[in-house]
Length: 567
Image (tube, rainbow, N blue to C red):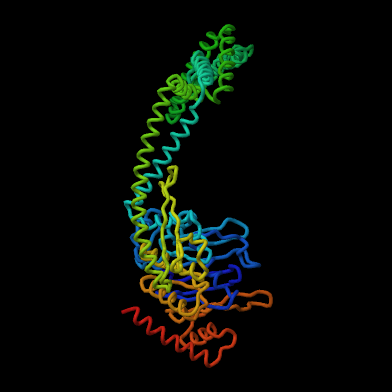
C-alpha cells in the first residue's frame, strides 16, 4: 500500500506530505483546492509523463515521491530489475521534474527508466480518473478488457498468435515483393549475373586491399626509399670523405672500455652493452645493405598494381566501402539469383509456408476466441451482479462477438460491449445509451471485478461518483468501502454518503504563502472535524446545526454499515 506521499513545488503545491492508512482514504475539499493535482502527481510518480509547465512558478524543479509498504518482497520482478527490497518491505519511487535539464526517476535511490517504472508501478497501484470513462466507450479497448481476465494458458496462446502473425506477415510481404512478370525476372537475372561475374572475375581477397596498396606505394616511391636507406648505410660505414663511421666510433669506444675494465670491474656491464650494440648495428648494416642491393623498379608491376587499385576502387563505388563489403554483397546477390532462377519453386514454397502458417493461426485464433467467449460469459454474469448491487437492477450487459474477415496479431474477434438499461429496450453500444451516473457505476463494476482478479494492493479513484446522488451514492459508497476491506483505496469525492464511510478523511484546502502565490494544504480530520466537513458537503456554504446533526447521524449510520460489512 501507499504509506506516504510527498510533493514539493508542483503546480500550486509548495510542500505537502500525506501519510495514508489501510482501508478507505478520502480526499475532500473545495473546487480548485488541489485534490486532482495530488492524484496527478501520484500518476506521474507511477510513470506518467511530467512536463516542465507543472513546476511551481519561480522554482527550478518539482520533487514527487511515494513510499510503499510491499507485502510480496520476493516478487521476481524486483530481482529482474536489480531493485533491493529491505525486509521491512519499504519501496520508494521518486521523480524529479527539472526546468533546465532532463527529469530523473528513481526506485529505492536507483535511477530507473520510465519503462521499468511502469513495470514496477503497475503491480502496486491502479488509478481510475474521470477520463477512463472514454476508454470504456472506445470499442478498440473492449477486447483488451476481456483479455485481461485470461489465465496463464490464455496469455501463452495469445503470445504464440502474436509471434505467428509476425512470421505470417513477413512471408506475405516477401511473396508480394517476389511477384513479377517473366520479362522483369529475366532482366533481374541478367543484372545479378553481370554483377556476380564482375566481382568474381576480380578474384578479390580481403587481405589484397592492404597488400596491393602497400606494394604500389613501395614501387612508386622506390627512388626516395633508396636514397634514405643509402644515407643510413653511409652513416654506419663512414663512406664520406671525413670517414665518420658509427661502427668505427662504437668499436673505438669498446677498445677504451676494454682497457679500463682491468682497473674497474664495475665497467664490465657497460662493455657488454656496447659489444651487443655493435653486433646489432653490424646485423642492421648487413640487412640494409642487402635491402638496398635488392631494390629494383619493376615498371610493369607498378602499372599492374595501379590498374588493380583502380579496379578495386571501381568495385567499391558500386558494391561496398571495403573488399569485405563487396564479397558479402556477392553472397547476398548469389542467394537472390538462386531464388529468381528457381522462381516457380520459391513461389510455391512460400505459398505453402503461408498456407501452413494461416492454418495454424486460424486454429489458434479459434481456440483463443472460444476461451474469450468463456471469459465473456463469466464476465457478463459478474458485471450484471455488480450492477445490480449498484442499483442498476434492470440492466442487461452483453459482450458481442463478430468474426473478422482477416487474421490479426490478436486473433479473429471483434468485441463490443452492449447494454440495455431499461426493460424492453434493445441492446445498444455502450456509447449510445448510458448517462454519466450509469457510466460511473459500470466503470466501478469493472474496477471491482478487476480488483478481485489482478490483486493490485492500492486503488485510486478520482471522482468516480460523477453524476450520482441520493440512494445510488450510498450504494456506490458501500461498494467502494467493500473493495477497501481487502486493499487500500484512495478516493477523491464530493458526496457525503461516501465521505461518511471513510477510514481516514483528509481535507485539501488553499492557503497563501505570500501575497502573490496560493498553495495547497492537507489536514487529516479528527472525528469532530469530520462532522464539520461532512456538514459542508451536505449544506454547502451555510453549515447549520441541522446540517451538523445530519452529519453526525450519517457518521453513526456509516459505523453500523462498516461493522456489518466486516462480519
